[in-house]
Amino acid sequence: MPTEPVRTVVVDNIGLLVTNDSTLGDGPLGIVRNASVVMSGSTIMSIGAAGQVADDWIDAEGRCVIPGFVDSHSHLVFAGDRSEEFAARMAGEHYAAGGIRTTVEATAAVGDDELRRLVSGRRAEAGRAGITTIEIKSGYGLTPASEARALRMAQEFSTDTTFLGAHVVPNEFAGRADEYVDLVCGEMLALAAPHARFIDVFCEVGAFDVDQSREVLRAGVAVGLIPKIHANQLGAGPGVALAVEMGCASADHCSHLSSIDIALLAESATVATLLPASDFSTRQPYPDARRLLDAGVTVALATNCNPGSSNTTSMSFCIALAVRDMGMTADEALWAATAGGAAALRRDDVGRITTGGRADLVMLDAPSHLHLVYRPGVPLIRSTFIAGRAASNQPGR
Image 1 (cartoon, rainbow, N blue to C red):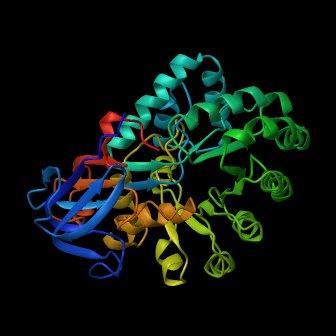
Image 2 (image 1 turned 60 degrees about the vertical axis):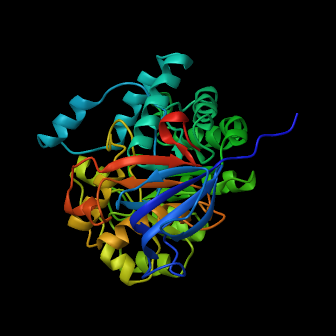
């Protein structure tokens, strides 16, 4: 039987279009005014002045359209609730990595159907928040079978999955961290690798030291995974230097950086992924994004959605925090939450609105992207299109 032709869709009468392509419009964000975008299936066919024609017509009525947010750091596969832990921190207790074990126990206690329901709900929530591409980590299993289970489930919702078996040392390996690293690099990696694109490690006091972290990343690279790292979150340390040494796609958190760390990042292709909602939740110092940007470092923003230290899917909130507390401009923060996230995932098909790119669009209930900062806390995401389809219709990749 003949295949039905794909219908084209035009989003017309866009007051301000952010393309992230400086060849298409004004400034680094490539801003085009009075624009329209034509989509065919999952692909952007053309970008032009308002009034382009297609099979189906969507009237933006002068609103702003931006690229879909690219969330390059999340932990969606979990069960359980740690709201009491959060409340205790707000009352003055300090954050420590050991709370991860609480979520490991809660996640192990639920079956696949319930866990899938929880992940699906979070992915749908992220879509409503304008996130069109999301990386999803494992890390709340910490056994070979449970880490593989988490990654198989993550694959149902994203192609950007990350093996994080080296999240924390489980209780049964207390005092035997090197033995656990052997397990991560051996049996666990063998089961996890077919379901992952990246490998990650929490290089931090209370988690894994630099030698253990290097061993984990080398093992992942040896089987074809792209390295990433949790680095310099709770204090100064060797994580960023290791990220550059290993050619990591990103070093994530980066709350405590020396001048040497910044110079290393600036001379490398490693993206500094900043997670301001986590610093908000843990009362940790915010990273100095201004120093990074002025040094020429590529910066991404991500939500770090997880149950213990950043239980949010709001990239808009992260953008507002980055401008208010990290020294970024509104334009820089939006770029970091879109094109910067794509760079952290080593993808060139998302994070921009360009001809031939994936049709990921977010329409704001506002005339400009500046309102993401100007009106913090207001739900400004009017509609989200993932690969040309409304986010509510499918889980997104």
